[in-house]
Length: 419
Image (spheres, one colour):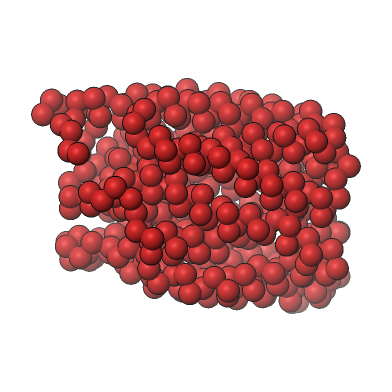
């Protein structure tokens, strides 16, 4: 075989089945939905939290940033050990922690903005409960990412899992306002806790970690495990690009409900726009599933990022609900198309899933900064500043990830066919 610019992962030969198992997809769908549900609710709960605690946009953005930052830390700490830990146990424990945190959030919110304990305001107590939620969510998401990276044909596994998970998670958009409108943020947190309880049984069919690798790395730390992973330079380059890229995408995502409010949509109408826009946007995921790796990585990454960035900028120019729906649909389609290729490209660098989990942590780290930055930009400069943020971060991400795609395509071109 001709030398490749990418080292081949030294691990157990991957499963050659063409499609991931139904049991794995069912489990991934439920666990992924629980792990990300509180994150997805942030945009819709923005106004309710501002009212409940009498806070400005920047304050709520900072709260969200703290929550996502802790989620990133939990994901990063799990990246190495998940090659040997039981993914089922990690998902179950994470779900219980997440439920407890959401119940505590509902209790604190119900006490009101004027409550304090030992000199600590209710808003800061809420922040502590959101940290608990983040730890549980990060553990759950990491267990799913590691399982999918170990599946046959990871680009297809990630695409299918994204579709099935999104179909379930998108139900939150029209249902959450039913709890928010009569009960405010307290109702929203109770809704999140109840949803996690309903989906808890989905955790039992995650792919186990590899027994041989478990024994070889039983006492290995997180950082040593990542240092042992192949293709470190290319993986770190991709992680930096996604970190910057997601600051823009996460920023516009967190204020979409506020933008919708400015176009005249109320909470219920916004929920349905999110629901239908996201579900129709899954066409991008179906396209990614069909494509697999047949066109390499450079072209799909380039196309997907462009169709994610342009509507992300276009959001700030929406003048009515119809325009907002169209933009949200195109934006969602770009996201659902490109995301499987982000994860699959990292899985190609290490099929034990270490770089895929670490990349998700880096990506979410950008998302952790996004709410705070977006909140400050909206408060002091308006939505046009969000459009500028999406443009700058999008160009950077596109240029760097195109180089990653070229390297992966070069590897495929020099590899000996195995199918």
